[in-house]
Image 1 (tube, rainbow, N blue to C red):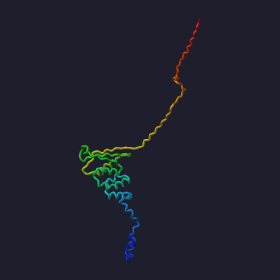
Image 2 (image 1 turned 180 degrees about the vertical axis):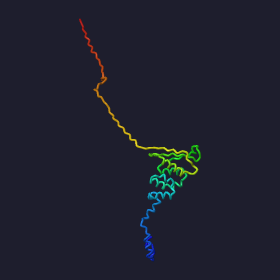
Image 3 (image 1 turned 90 degrees about the vertical axis):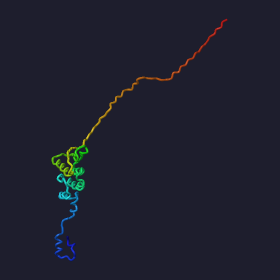
Image 4 (image 1 turned 180 degrees about the horizontal axis):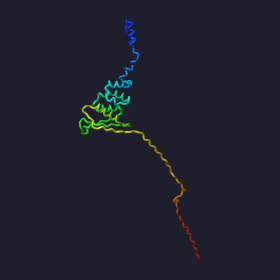
Length: 201
């Protein structure tokens, strides 16, 4: 409060008290504490507590913590469904697929989970994080029968090739194999006969 908010008939004591309680800090950051993207990093645990975020200990980086808080409300709406487990694991960069065992002739309410870890290893802490999130977000009647974890790595393969081609040509003098002469043949003939007659007495 400041003295400008007091009525004109304020006393000197009231004006002095108003000056003493004036906030010297900027209250504008208060508007960001409920925003997972703009909340100061030091206040993220309190925001997670207020949003009832589960699996907070599984988030090892600030990016994962903000993602967990951002997904808190949608996840609580679907909590107990397979999609909520998939979303919770995706918030810590884990790709998961859930298979209903009853669909394959198995026990009702039993399910298995396939985990794909891309370009990263698996230690004991990561395995415990995965199991903790699955248990936290599954419904009370369901239970997991198998957890399959596959490690995949990706990289670039560079291939190169070169071709060196050449032709060898030998030129010989031209030699015809056969001479063929063609032309027109005209045939003609004539006879010239002379008779000599002698008359004697």
